[in-house]
Image 1: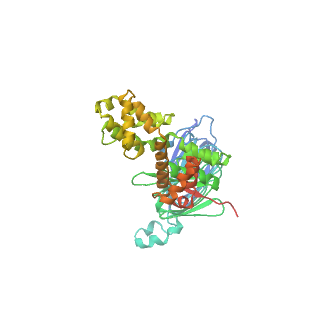
Image 2: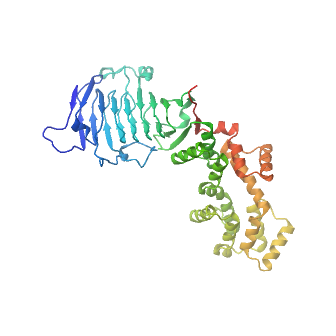
Image 3: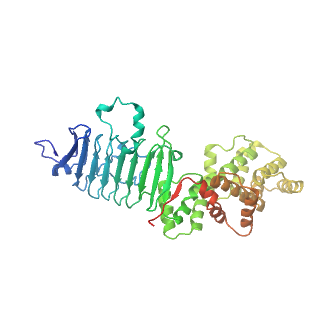
Length: 462
């Protein structure tokens, strides 16, 4: 047993302890942690041996340091948590037990490691693993032998009731994670498409691919492309109520759920907030309104200002902000039509009306409509008022409903709407149904659920 202690003669509190532990690969070295060492804020060790460390940090109340920059973490379960104790080890097959409820940062390095923590908000970095059948004398073995030993490369991680972040790095190894209670994040290398998922009967999910993992107790998975640094996410829903809410991220916004959004909407669903109210939260969000307005705003710019590339970035952002704060698309059309740029464009009244019909109604103006609007303009009605009248018309609202259904099919199912399906949902809207009703119906369809790859429903013990 090795005694881990501060240097002889040192009397003050030690913040950081570093050292190299003697031992060859395969040697078991149990560290006896002294009280002085347990009072340190950070212990940084290096060794090829298999270290056994059992420590209960005795931290002062102000013993906190931000070491988040040390972590290779794409999404932290609790980005606001301050790390209070840091421990790193070497490349051996280590057993690390850190007791207590402080927030820990633990990096076990390479090796087939077992890591156990208490109930703080922990960050655990598990390495790529060692092959148990290899030693320093096997370096010249035929590379083909490596493929036969993948099952020996395992990390085992057990965390407590905090909001933990667990990083599983590398390939050709299998890890076992029990993240405990809390809202926990597990990060893996690669893309969602690189893995196959299967759910068990105890709120767990198994992933197989270049990297394999059996994960229990986690709520959120992140996948990091090691080449591009692109991040994808998968939410592990605890029940169908959660899943129905969380599928709205992809179905309405066309993207993976972010951590904060997943936490918030899962909590709201479980607390009894209706799916209709949750759908309306998405539909009324600045993100949805802004994204939905891009195409019509660009069309208005092209038709009313004579542009060919739509709105400039700042102009688009300005109109999106107005829409998010309660203005209508008719208000936007009026603003664009009354702008100095529109006046410089100097369209004839007839062309102005024709272009508005194309932009807002998706059709050509018939002669009666054209004559009516041109007459109003001739008699003093402003361009802004005519734009507001056309874009705010019932016909424009019907086209907006049609566009809504078309876009919803694309984001939720990955395909264009079929004529019978679209007609059915338009009929729902025409008979008093809301956009939330349609969104819930399409996003919750079996086709959309099968298309969605970022929400997985876990199952309880049976």
